[in-house]
Length: 139
Image (cartoon, rainbow, N blue to C red; front, side):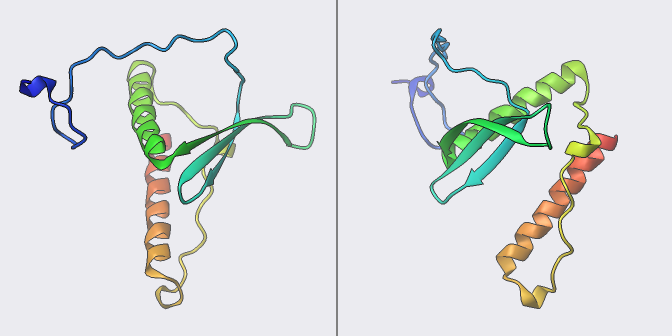
């Protein structure tokens, strides 16, 4: 087996050069529209719940389906969403998010002595990630 045919789970190593199978879409595949998403993380996996905001009503959401995936699948999904969104924006320009949909700010950071270091690290990450996201939206 030459190097190009070598299979490995180690990042950066050569993988087999096989064609990517195109999924056959079953006519009975459930399809739905979503404009509302709720994320429910757990230790072993993450659930994504999909719904549609009610046109007539008090801002309620009709939750209609959910998908649970492993964290590994979620990480791969993050990769492909990033790549696909980047390609779309290269072709069509920045996807503008309406002001009402922009992520809300984080609460003020607590005193460093009153909170676990892991939580403080997460809150700082969240604050910085939101700042970069909002900068991109106003560029």
